[in-house]
Length: 286
Image (cartoon, rainbow, N blue to C red; front, top):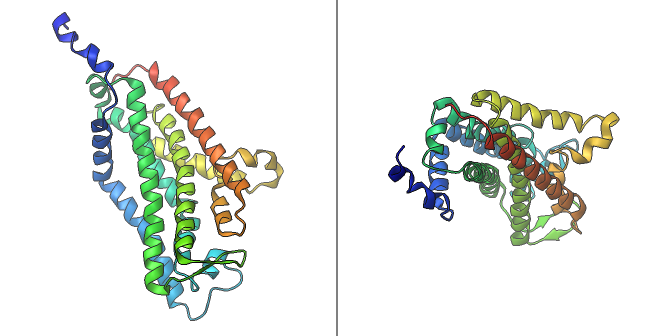
């Protein structure tokens, strides 16, 4: 390359961040058929829950989870029941698909080296990829919640919400608590996305990366059920995902929520740094 050709690259490297790269990444993510199919599945679960409870001749039994027992009293609980079910598999799978495809997908298609030759710095590439993963995690989680609220209100109505502790709050406050619970769980999914970004830098096979991320989250759930390793439970990425239920007690138990956000932030920082350390010196040939 001549000096004249190389000269324009200097100011480009030092320019401020532009949203065009992120918007392009989001468009690609939302146009992929597998991602759209995944969102359709996520939205279908709260619909199935609402219809199943509606068709039931009586209220859910005493053995049903707390959120399920409250659905017939207030439709907002459909969203919480759907989040409880989907956080074990469907939401982690949705995040795993997006995160696993972030870098490995580019390498698999042979577009990664051309993307870096734009020029785009490697830290900026990782930052944009992770930002898209975070948007995807929040989109998936809020899609489940919003669909659940809409279906629940149509089938069971709204009105004041009776919290799990027995206290009653107004509809607006209840909806606000559902939104906070959704955002909290989305933060947990975003931290899993950071793990996925790191895994995606280790391979050129997006399917392999997706499976590895899903195995990681599943292993965390399994370890969290084994009492013999209880010492590791507070440090597992999934341990505090269910703490969003503490928002529906009076008073709110902030301890579990704060610890969950701390763990999520720790996982995000550690694995983003690991992704940068791996990708910064990686020889990109595809």
